[in-house]
Image 1 (cartoon, one colour):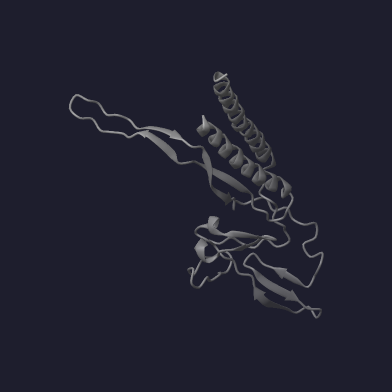
Image 2: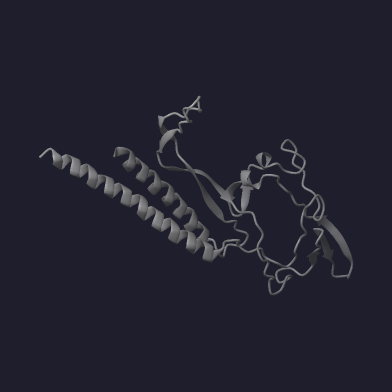
Length: 216
């Protein structure tokens, strides 16, 4: 009986965490470059009431008998999938003296109609983006653990359209990759799961109350 109470509590705790993540995703639906997150669950430690044993002679195998102790959060992962890139109304609205090519070259145009390349924007690619740590303002740390180009000891960015990298889209602003409809659906599922976990607690409490009343 007490096991069901603690199991229900784990459900409430984990679904509350998922609701927190969903709420943050919805809040950032219009945040440029925001990467949505999701909660991954795993079953908690199980109490073994009987171990398993193999077949022997005419005696068949005996399966293990276990009771789980609830749910736990195995991780909160970021979705680094792409999103649409709605172009701004005027790519050069704030400054008209330079352009950026798909290869990341920053070409400066001078008033005497001469042009020169001032520099190049480099990109980085990671073999395990989920190892990156959000720091806010679309900044990430943990580059070494994410497996960057050049290795963890000396991360080396590369030019766009090389080493499997994409290209630079000048005059465009990357949008949030939050799927609003999907987040609302997940929120409903999480709410119902939370209610079910809470219900197991109240039901267990009622059963315990019945046991207490038997003594009267």
